[in-house]
Length: 173
Image (cartoon, rainbow, N blue to C red; front, side, top):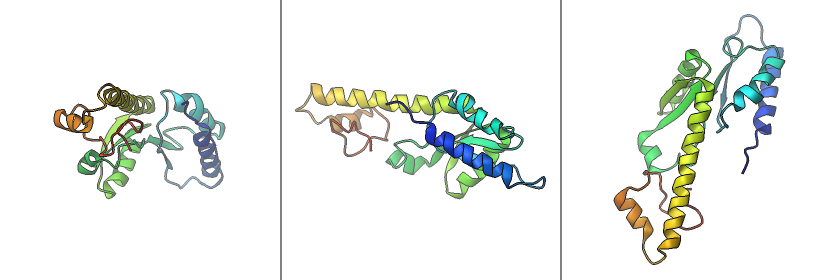
């Protein structure tokens, strides 16, 4: 389906309104962390104009970081590696969110540039959809064979595959 960005847009509008109304000259630059997968250029086309409408400049008055959550975060792979992908509007944003992530025992993988971050998120989700379709095709083509076991033996897809893999749920939680 098509992503619904109105919730993120409304949240950014509310946060920016509060930043502008409730800060003075002696404040630390707020960091807004968007924990959502966004289409490439969504930030530039939809969110940045909202921030600017409130008289705020990205990177000066407010910092932005994108930290998408993926459907495989509770898989064995995630539990073992404990890394999180982040993208920030600048190095300072990445540094600040990295410090927070490390408190939770996760290792940040950082990228400066929000559009690049949106693209990485988009590509990872697309890869999962391709793997889902592949697994479903195998189940349909070979209904009498234990596809789960073959996938595990050959490591056809990454270790994020669920134990509950079957036609219909596509192998992911």
